Each structure stands twice: as structure tokens, then as C-alpha cells.
Image 1 (cartoon, one colour):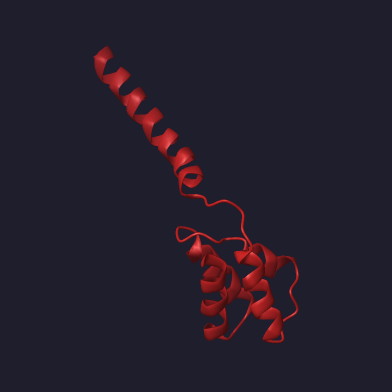
Image 2 (cartoon, helix red, strand yellow):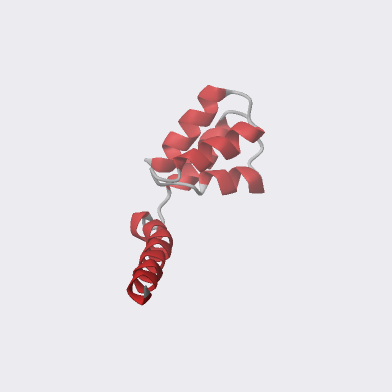
Length: 90
């Protein structure tokens, strides 16, 4: 009975550890890609404020869905949104 509880505790710790470590493992070093996203949107006529800067900061393949969802909430043109997030990621 105690062995089962110990296994459950180790399993829970492993899941929590993985949930904490995966974002760090998949994160890229800071680069100018988020500024490419911001510049693209500025050139399309959008005012680049805090919300757009936050959306463009999601610049990895793993976090691209956050970029898309944040920009879709602000910008109605889907082409501009996908292009900006692609610039943030590339």
C-alpha cells in the first residue's frame, strides 16, 4: 500500500517537473524576431502598443498559438495576424 502511494507521489512530481521544465527547454534566446512582428504591423498601419508587443513576444513554434490568439483579439485581418506571428517566429 505504501509503495503505491510513493509511486503516485513520484509520478505527480515528474508530471509537475515536466510541466515546469518544458517551456524552458523549448524557449529560444532573445532575438530581434519580435521586433520584426511589430515593424510589420506598424507598416500595415496598426498602432503598436502594449498588447501587440505582448503578442509578438510569443516567438517560438510552441507558443505561436498564443501569438495568433492574442493578435486575433486585436486585429480583424487574418492575413496580417498570421504574417506577423510568422515574422515573430522566424
